[in-house]
Length: 396
Image 1 (cartoon, rainbow, N blue to C red):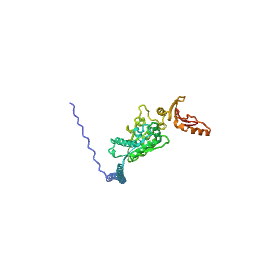
Image 2: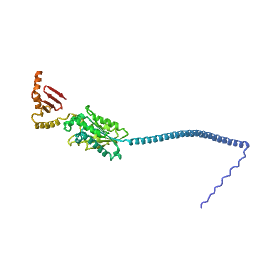
Image 3: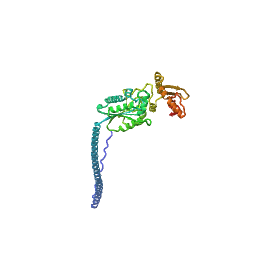
Image 4: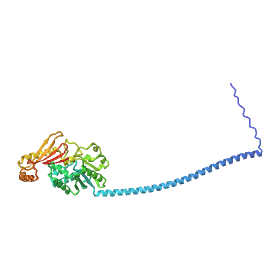
């Protein structure tokens, strides 16, 4: 067996030699110096901490001042906003009360536009037709507004119809629907007199598109009116470009459709309506109105005149041979043909004055054909020429 070896304990430290007083004093001096260094370090840190504390107190005071200023400004802004909100609510209430007093609906009609000439059952009955048209418009407009407004029956309806009465009368006379301008004026007078807020405005003979221009100006003016509840427009799409409509509040606008609307208008978020009891439906094969529709109405077309000339010629054949006669002839040429309307005077009346006329011509030294007649020709370019004896007048 291995033997266990036990280590000997370390020798005890040598005994401390006694220190002298000077040695002991030196040790105390070292301790004092370290204590002073510690005190200096603590004092330095205390001074820095006090400086930071003072700066922090200054910053805190500044922040408190800024916060108080901001709080005061916020309070002022809050009071101002509350006052503005209260004022805006008061104005809104006052405006609503004002609008509720006399709200109205405006109807603008360009009667010169293609498809917006009122039906024959109105325009052929003089003043009675105008009164019947006014009643029908009022009924149909209120009928259209009832699903949209609860107070539709109490809304004021203002209707303004713009048209060139002279040009319209000439067109209707050629269509054998009225006899003269006076009959059409009686119709418009009956329309205006039936309801006080209905007006028929004669735009007169002037630049093409006068009625359409009036409609555009009224449309731009009234859409900003606070009393306006809705506006209904019957006008050619040519006079209502999309650039104009896009600047208007479309929720207040309804277009009356006679012909199919162009794509530029269909894409806009606006209401479209038809009033078949007021305006005649368009012919199935007829295209959308061209901008020259009003000129056609004012001057008529040669085909319409040809048909009317045939009717008048047949009526002239049924009368006695001594009465005035109308003859319609057509001569073909390289330019596309021209139509001739020949008006012969009453033979009985001519025979009575023939002797006097001959005496006058003898005194003048001239002669005149016994078969004198008046010839009116309409060429393919709508040029009208009038030939009466020695005088000839051309109208382009």
